[in-house]
Length: 470
Image (cartoon, rainbow, N blue to C red; front, side):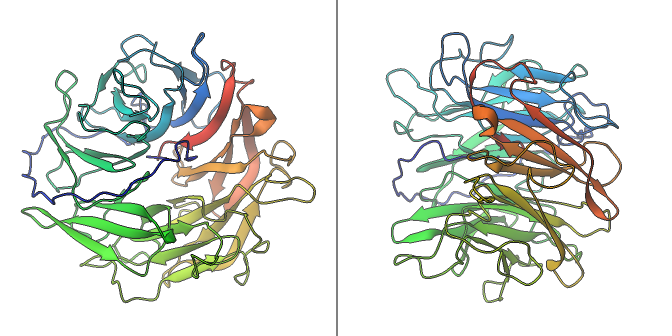
C-alpha cells in the first residue's frame, strides 16, 4: 500500500482478535491488478503527496501513467485530486492524498481499482486522522470514487491509511483491503460495490504501532496473509506479526526473530509458496544490536504453515558477496523494496532501494539494487545496482535526489517480464519517477525513461515519487 514516513507520532495499543465470517464469493471474473482501463497493460499510480491543489498546500495528488507496449509516457496520464469530479472529499492543506496506494479489482467488474490514503486528512475538529478512498477503474481509466467507512476512534495525527494492502484475506474469491496508521488497523471485506463500499469492516486486534501493511499468500492455500511490521520502544528493527486465515477466523502468528519496516511477498524459490522479504534499513546501535550497517534485507521462506519461525533466513546487504557497494551509515538499504519476475524465469526477483546512498560528493543521491530468485532461494549472483550515474539511466546523481524513494516491479509492457519503476522524490526539488525495462538477462537501460514533475506538468509541490502503488 506503498512510502516516506510523513507522520512521526507513534503510540502502542492492543485489541481483541475477532473471528470474521467469510463473505459469499462473487462469480464475476476479476480484472488484472493495476490495469485501470482494462486494456491488458498494467498502469502505474504514483503519489504526489505534497502537491498543492489551488491554494491548498500539500493537499496531494495521484498521477496515473498508463502502460503500453512502449512503456509509459508523459502524454498518457491522469492527475487525480480530491477536487476531481466524483472523488469524495475536498482538497485541503496537509491532506497528503496519495500517501498510501494499493491496487485490486474490488468490485470484480474487470477493471482494477485504486485504494488511496490521505493520511493527513482532518475530520471535523480532529486534525490529521487520515482517510481512505477507492477510485474506480473503467474503460476510460480511473473515474469517481467511494470513501471507505471512517472509524470514529482515530487519534489526531494518527495517519490512518498510511499503510494499505489488498488481497483475498479469507479465501472467498473477493478482494479485501486493510488500512493501517499508528494504533489503528482495519480490515474491509469484499465484495465491494460502488454505492455501498465493502460488505463489512472490522478493527483488527493485537496490532500495535504500525504504518505499513504487507499482503500475500505465504501458505499456498489461496488466502493472503496480512503482515504488519510493528514499531516498538527499545526495538528500532521492529516486530513482525501476521494473520493467517484458518477457515473460521484468523490466527495471529509472530516471527520473533524477524526485523523490518517494509516488505513484499512473492515466490522467490519457485516452490509454490510465497516468501516474505523484509527490509531492515536502520543501522545497528545501542538499542538495536541486530541488522547490518547501511541496512539489509532478509527472506523468510513460506510453506504450508507459513514461514517457519525457527528457520535461518537469507540475509543480504551491501557487504554480501557479489552485491555492489558497501554498507555505510544511513544508506537505508532496504528502506523500500518490491518483488517481481524481471527475467521471466519463473522466480521472483527483488528490487532493494537505498535512497540514502551517497555517490561521490552527491549525498543521498540514492540507488536501487536488483537481486535474483532461484531454486535455492534469493541469490547474490548477478546482483546489479542502478542509479542516475548508471550508463543509460536518465539524469545525473545529485545531492538529495533520493533515487529509490519508492520502488515497484510490475510488467507495464505486457511482455511477461517485470519492469522497474523507481521514485526519485527529491529530483529537482519536486520529484520524479524513472522506469527501466525487464528482459531475459535482467534489467536493461535501453528505453529507460525519467519523468519529472515538471515534465508531467504537475502543480507546484514536493515529493512526487515518494509512493508507488503495489
